[in-house]
Image 1 (cartoon, rainbow, N blue to C red):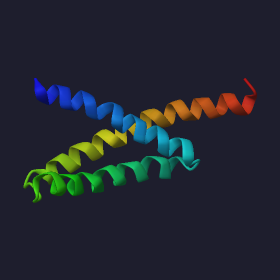
Image 2: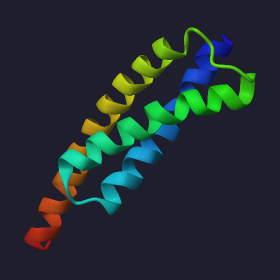
Image 3: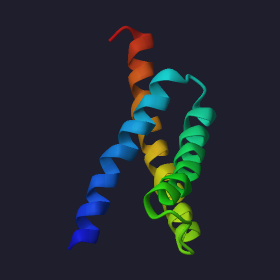
Image 4: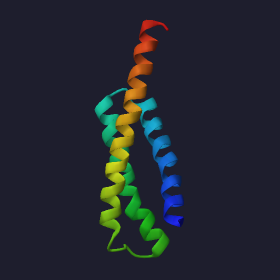
Length: 91
C-alpha cells in the first residue's frame, strides 16, 4: 500500500515540473527532453544523499522515472499546444 501512495505522490510532482518547463520554454522538443533529463539525473543524487550510497536498483528507477516523465511531458505538451493555439486566435 505504501508503494501506491508513493507513486501517487510522485505523479503530481512530475506534472508540476513538466508544466514549469513547458511554461518557460517555447521550444517543444526542449520542453520534453530537458525535464526528462533533469529528473533522471536528479534521482541518483537524491538517492545518494538519502541512503549514503547509490542503490544497485537505482538504474531501474531512473529508467522508469524517465519513461514516466517523458509520457507526462508529452501529455502536458498537448495541453500547452492547444492553449497557445487558442491564445493566437484570440479566444
